[in-house]
Image (cartoon, rainbow, N blue to C red; front, top):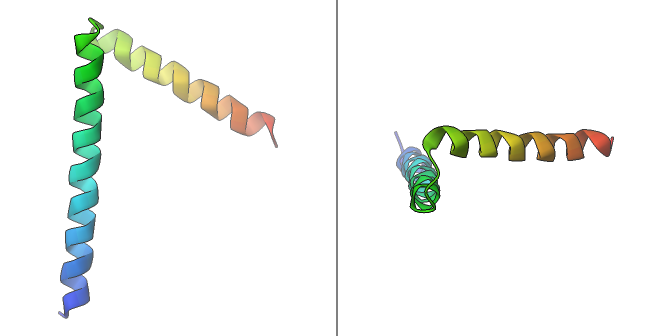
Length: 59
């Protein structure tokens, strides 16, 4: 294995850690606003639905 394998692996690991950190911060901010996890998940689903409908509306 050459060095590109290790650089690629490190990049993938860094992206994974970054996304976990971002979602953890988002969940923490929702909890500090006194939302329970179920309603927070529901709001995320609503936001996804809105963005998906915007995409399909433009086609």
